[in-house]
Length: 350
Image 1 (cartoon, rainbow, N blue to C red):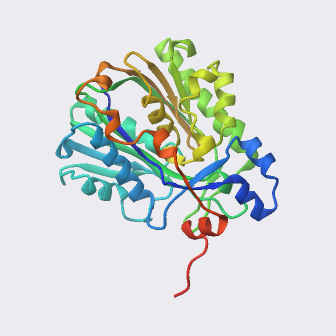
Image 2: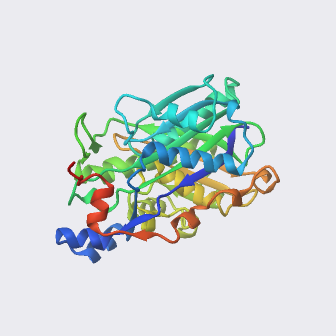
Image 3: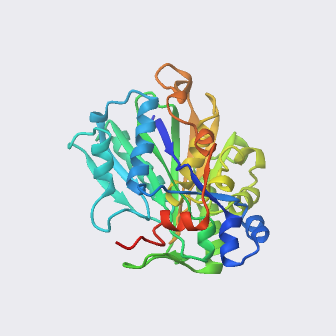
């Protein structure tokens, strides 16, 4: 059975509070934090970008399990903030972790679900025998224009998953996707910041597609919410995943371990993948995890995952890399001026 061999996460230590952003723009911090359910977000360091975050997450994954990088036959990096418009991030990640040139590599873009699309691709390649292992990464230094609603949540971070068939720590029993042409969010070539379609972001975007993917996988597998111990949904804010979980009849207890957005913000392609990692950080053999990502434009990938005995074996060590909870702890707080400098909103004249 194909599944997750190991996983790793990287989150920058720098953080800014939502109330600090609201202070600059004269907004009501309580209304914004309460409305979004987000109270702080991660900020990249001056020398951090999607590529460095992806490399750190991949190295954390390999630290947890002795996977030979030479056997990683595919590397896919999902992001909407790749450092280059034309120059693949995946090649940088592959070489940084010691993969051989005998690999296929590509960058994926599908808003916030590009990373889970990479997982699906690696599943197919590994299950067909074309590769031994595949590396799928969701990494972003998310963009939000000054004073725009996105600025309050757009964060930085990433997660990496090695996919294979050789005694995985979690088996992926089934996956499916639900996709339509719904332009709820976009960024044209040459534009610094994305735009969003306001009211289209919620019901015709997020909720329609997440529910579509969830209902489809339930039809295909014959399972329902009660068959899972945990559930993870894409987290553009804290309100959306809680609302869709309630609509789909998942309980607050099922989504609580993976709901990291209140302290982290929205890491876009890393969002649902970091939520899954936080859940795997506490999961035990036999636990069943449901995951549904979402990407504007728009689509959702759903996964039926079961944790195996390998997660507690000598082959795998959770303690060899920081857990999501540890990465969220001990933040370095910055004010808006420092944040703007870190994000490149203001630059030093030479």
